[in-house]
Length: 204
Image 1 (cartoon, rainbow, N blue to C red):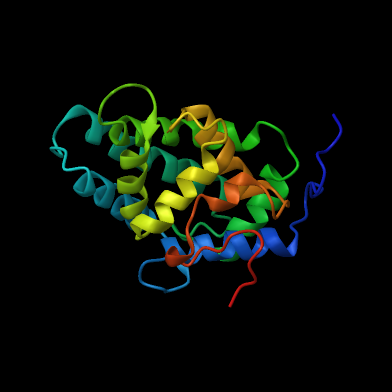
Image 2 (cartoon, one colour):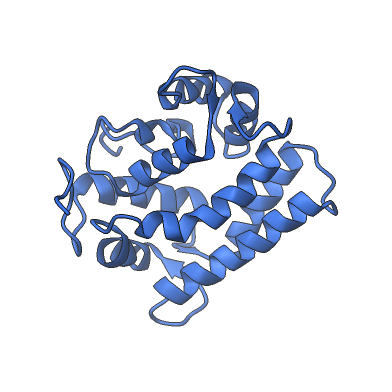
């Protein structure tokens, strides 16, 4: 299969991809010790559950916590090359270059179960789509402002129907994590206030 324009070959990362993934890693590294561990993933899940005001003992938040833990275990098994029960930025970059970049379908296989569990909490009206209000609350749990999240939603809503489907969000996530195109729509997924740059912005 031919690679898409601006595609990076397997085993390599462009400067844009390194900056973007590095900034995302730093956003997850809550205590800024240079590592991401299980507690950082659990903190993200707890923040989302709190933001949406759901009872932590209900089925959906329990499923989210379980999937976040399983997702962490998948990532640790794949990336933690020194077996220290935590991930360094270099381990993340090496994994992405060697296992995900340039391999169609690899990212979706890794991330789809977690995305489904997240959306099960975020989709409060249970219509199978994420509306603007739901998206703003979701991004707010990651410290995005309402204005930033609204702008991101408008960019990601490519068909202009006022909602985002699971497929649209998975596409945006894959673009953010893997694309070397500074104009890719997924670059808007993580606003700048989280410390994550868009594709056309140089790291400060």
